Length: 376
Image 1: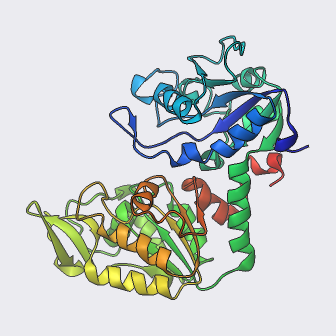
Image 2: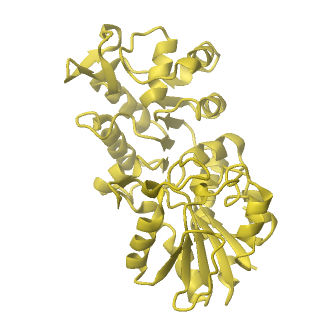
C-alpha cells in the first residue's frame, strides 16, 4: 500500500509549516507550497486530513500567540480555497462536518512533544487511521509528531519527503566530485559535529555567518564585536589542527560594519569595534571560482546578515553562481530560500530542500529516525 492508495480514511499528516513570519504575516510560503501535492492527493481519494506542524521554538506547555498556527491555517485555507477548521487542542473532537481538513495548534505547545512522550504519541494516533509524514525539515528529530506517532499508526511517506530523499540519494550514490559544501548560520553548536564528519566527504568546505566567526576566533584572528560561540572555539581549533583542515575555505577579507558604515576589510586589519556581517570582495571571487570547478554543491544557510544591505551580497552572488554553473546542486535552510525566490532562481537548482539541519544530518549519517518507518 502506498500514500496514493489511501482512500476514505482519517489521515494524520505531519508537515513542516515552520515558515518565516514578520508581524504575523508569512514572509515566504515555500514549505507550504511543497505540501500541496500530498494534500491534493489525499483529498482526491476522499480522505479527511488532520494537519500537525510546529512553528518556532516556544516554551513547551506554554501558549504563545505569536507562534500560533492560526495565520498558517488562514493562509492555507485561502490557498486551497477550502474550509480548514482550526483546533486549539489535540483533545478536541474533530467531526469533519462541513470541512475535510483540520489543523491542530502548534505541536510544540504540547508538554511531552520534544521528549517523544508515549502518552502524547498515542493521543495523536487516536485521531486517525493512518499517519503520513511529509516534514523533511524535522525528520532528524525524534519527537512525538515526527516519530512517536509512527509506533501506533501505519505510516507512509508524503510526496515531498520522497522526492527530496530520492534527489539527495542520487547525488550521494553518484559520488559527484569535486564536491563543495557551504555551511553557514548563527549557531555553531548544531553544526560542529556535522562539519567534522562532512569534511571527510567533501573536497571544499566554505563557512559563513557565526560559524565562520567562531573558526576565525579559533585561528587567532580579531573578530571585533562579531557574533560567535565562545564555548566552541577550542572545538573549532581542533578541527583547524586536523588533517582535513586544508579543505576549509576561510576568507581573506570581510565585509564589516565599522563606525556604523559598511567597509571591506582584510582579515588582519579588523579592529576590536568592527562587526563582521559578510565575506569580503576578494573572498567572494575565490568562493565563486571554487563553485565553478565543482561537480556538486550542497548549500545550507546564508553567508551573511541578509536582512541588511549590503551584507546580503555574498549570499546573492553565491546563489547566482550556483544557478549559472552546470552542477548538481541541493540548497537547504529556510533563510536562504526567500532570497533565491526573490532572484527568481528557484528552478535553477537540482533540489530546493525544505530541510536545513535534517539535510546535513542525512548527509552525515545516511539515515534519519523516521526513514526506516517510511521505507525510504
